[in-house]
Image 1: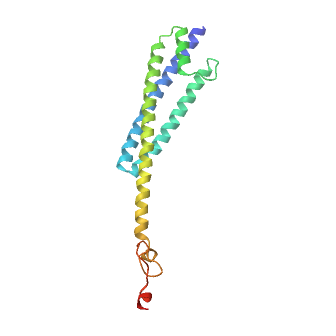
Image 2: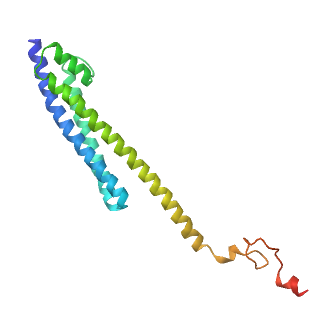
Length: 170
């Protein structure tokens, strides 16, 4: 009887893991789109993608909660994929190979997402650096010219002696 319960639970986990893998693949696609939007500096699309990524994250949290709910039926608080594989191996489950393949696939997708996120952070930092330089140029162009001159009417950045025309007349 215990074996049937575990097999039933493993079947439920397989269904949830299928959904998790699908949603992580969608998340990966969103991060790829975000990278392209950052390169193109498409702020409107970036905003849309951030909303979609947050929604996708909520879906993944819900799926993880569902996984935890199913695992609690086995009498444990949490069980990672390696422990699930061990449990499936102990009862000689036909789902054992699925869980092993899932572990490989989820690791691949996770690494891809991590690399894309790292690339996106670097693109954002580079964009901020460029924006700050452009802002400095704009601010320098908008600075009133009177600030560039000293009290003698000379360019304050010149290296020559600063004599006013009054001193020269005297």
